[in-house]
Image (cartoon, rainbow, N blue to C red; front, side):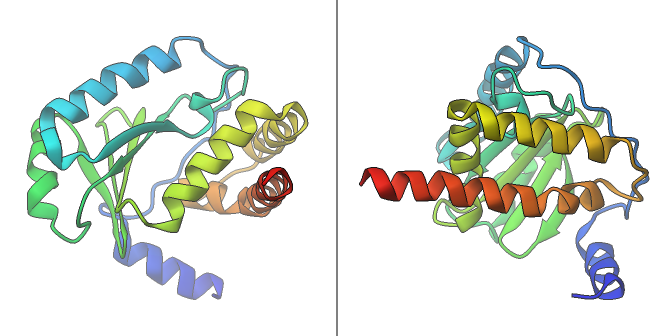
Length: 187
């Protein structure tokens, strides 16, 4: 996908358009798991049984890993396209819809310190998020590599958070490949 095609795609899926951002990577904060538990309860209360699973993902879910101080939440629902089932309760719980793309929605807090990624349970992204989290909790070398990558990228200017996220994708793919190779070798 060319840069122009990618920009056009982002313009269609980002609610409110692209937002210039300064990336801040902070040292691990031991309060992040408690923040997640509070968010998990908030989402579960809002959605009830419509929330099939609520998991802590992203760098704030990995003890010892430096991260943007944004708690990432993975929410799975039965049908991503059935927004009327889950979006109104999410709005009532204080979240706003930021991303609407095929197979994925992302809500955030108005303060932009929480991202709730919504998928169906069998989406590959669910497996990827959980595999990355679990591997980074286990492997010191890849956790250090990922932290160094994030610190290096945070020194750059970004036109949008998605550009920063995309810049990490090659390192994430390498880390996931090692995690999956280890799992295969143990099977």
